[in-house]
Length: 595
Image 1 (cartoon, rainbow, N blue to C red):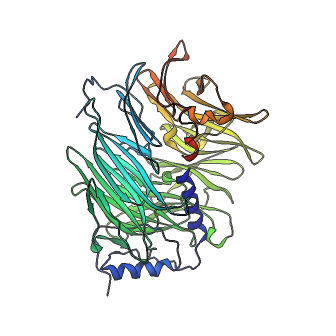
Image 2 (cartoon, rainbow, N blue to C red; image 1 turned 120 degrees about the vertical axis):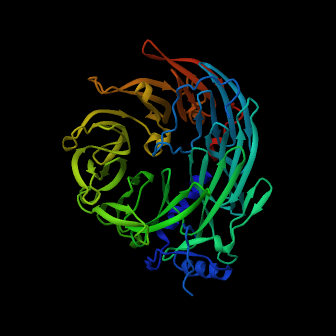
Image 3 (spheres, one colour; image 1 turned 90 degrees about the vertical axis):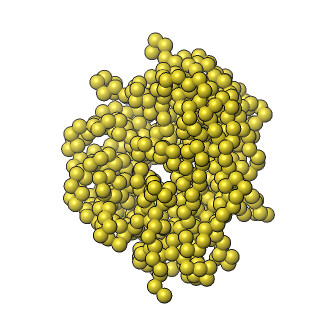
């Protein structure tokens, strides 16, 4: 709750505080020369922008003037639903097929699993004003990422926030903490590629003290030299963006690269590049900085920066493929406090060393994506094409051919009620959309759509499902179970109905995809998250709501704050076969209010 509240305040300030249009676009890469130089940079730009940022690294120039014991063969199991294959994203639940790892608020738990047998083998609790929110696992380690807060007299606003990275050795049955890393700042995002963890965070610059971030690795503290801090000319300089590369080999090494710029926004990762999109609301544009991952030095290097008209809603608006960077934006005039008809754009850049920005514009579509006044709600790139959903009163789905980067073409369009806020390519000819059903300009439920794009010029919505309630899956792709082995996907829904009071019932839907059937989308299981309903008046459903579901072989494991429950299919019906209580609701009745 604290994190969400703080984030909302930051977003509000970023959107509405602009007061002077400088719109500078130098885009060259520079190194900070000294403390006085850094202070000059901060003071200059802080005159017109709130104190948060993004940045750069690379070839800067002087500015002018083992496996757990007892493990047998690998078991098939679900993994976190991610944007790019091979680039893992952090989540609150992970599995390696033999154990389930859970990072929930102030606890880290490890559960040994063998079919329907469950055993809690490890539990670590942390102090107040600290919480976990993401984890990763490798063959050697479990990495738990969290934050630590300290508060001033304004109890709702942290005077200090730190990123914490706790690394546990999981190679034996005795799990133990191997390393602690901590540094000041606000967490943005992270990715795991093989045995390298990349963490991106922001650290506010105090323009009076001109402070630099401090990194603590166990008991050792370091600080970047001024010359190691890079920035992009012409951008706002009022915050550090920190890229931390954690080498997860036998010896754990943490490298930190510090950049000066503006508060980072959406992040796109692949195995070679990182793109950071920072919104400039006053000038109705987004600055996108490209970084490369140097696998020899385990450092991040700045390669270039571009500015594009409009804004990005999430990470799926960006993609890199075959030497080209593609981005979809949606535009309005927020900075001048007047909403105009949104103009939606597609830009294609060739990644090249010929341009000082590292990217050269080679193709675009600036008209035709959406009707007047429609905003882009979701984007999904898939090789040589991209599907785009816009919305205002109806939901147009567009298929755009990107096979000729210099001449992208809209080849298909379908208009239906509602819109998809997330798209998933089930295969090359099928898209699953998860979003909202809309009637009379009002959302009246969660809508799941199945689109056939075998012939992009003749798009079809071949199946739909409507659920009443709300779901994390509509805005967080990692909340969706993807089980291609059984042609099943699923997500949790908080269903509601109005009796004397609004009554919420947490359930989990497992949906089967069968493209050969007359019923291509079919609910094969509706799991009641509260088998024994008690204390409904005090929001017990929050504690029992299924946060994530994973599958290992033919078993499905539903994880809530209180239980791990095991299900199987018998004669086509879901059956609860075992459960393990991992937290006592009566002892922890009010903790979720502070989440």
